[in-house]
Image (cartoon, rainbow, N blue to C red; front, top):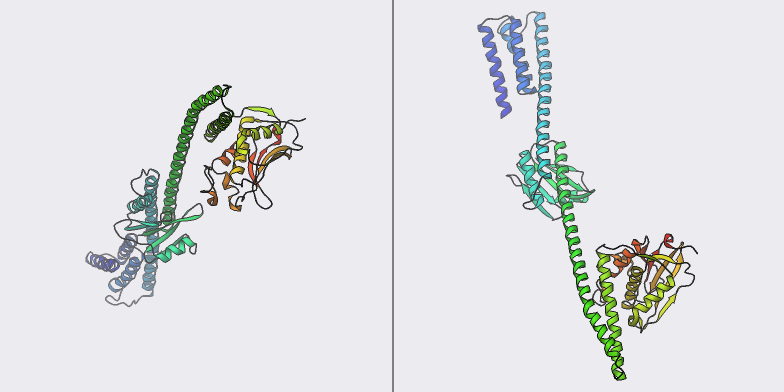
Length: 476
């Protein structure tokens, strides 16, 4: 409709020029220049099609009214044929050049507008302060920034489609399936709508649908800005979760430390009372045995409280090594003695042949790590099974190890067992524990420059190792 109206206006302008040139009157040269100026104006204003029609129409009017014989489309003089053809060629070439310049100008203006809109969209994405789901806000920002009638954003993380703009647009299921499975490229078109795949870290994160007059380059730029917005909020959410987890851990560690210290006071009173009562020679032998059991269990409870305090300190990362020189064999015997009644009914095989010279470690922390490993062995093996405990030289360093004859650790859990609060699904409800013991063991080992690991075993059971590097072994 618009093109037809422009063509009609072109014909009317040519007629008006013809009437004006015949009424003045002017010579043929002036008339030819008048037609040529009209062609250039039409080309620069409307485009090439209207300019070509004006060129041909002007040539015909020029011939009919201004070349003899007048009133016919025939030309008597051969020179006039040359003049007419020259006029037509000049008009068409000039109209092409003018139309090309117009297109380039319009393209430049369009690119400038798109850059301005991209800047506005980028600012909106970077300065976004919330208020509803982020994909919804992104869809609305794209629609507002580019005056697009319809925008649709499918978010893989939520599995929902968010829309912006006055018109409704839904992403077809086949396009979603193709985009998310990688069967199409970064962009595809359907009717008057374009769909663009959004990637985060090389993985599909969503699909963006746009209905409107937008260049391919701008579609890609919008997709990248939307990806930046999604990545920004994902990162912020991860930081918030990490901060919440850190604060939760700090609170838990603080509470545990406070409760453990509170236990120390009544335990001290219990120990003092038992010692005082046991000193009375008039107490019957049967009661004295009962007091001995109470005394031993009070010592055990005191040890558990001390371990809880130390564990809380290590989990909070608020500790430093208090290093001394100690023999590995001495550490083994001390830990077994500290376990006391916990190992009283169990057979413990200790192996420490050829351990070598002393090591420089934090004695209390290493003993805590070994107690955790022995406690694990007691929990995860039967009362009749033996526990193997020892130390050996390896690659110039010392390896402390604890092996049991229990069910072992599933192959897929060999690293996850060292994660805080992780417990194997099969043992989660049958074996007591919090799932922090092995995480503490690894923290202690790594604080010494070594590591803790689950070693390969032949058959049943599990063997955990605490590796102390050669740099901490003293020369003989």
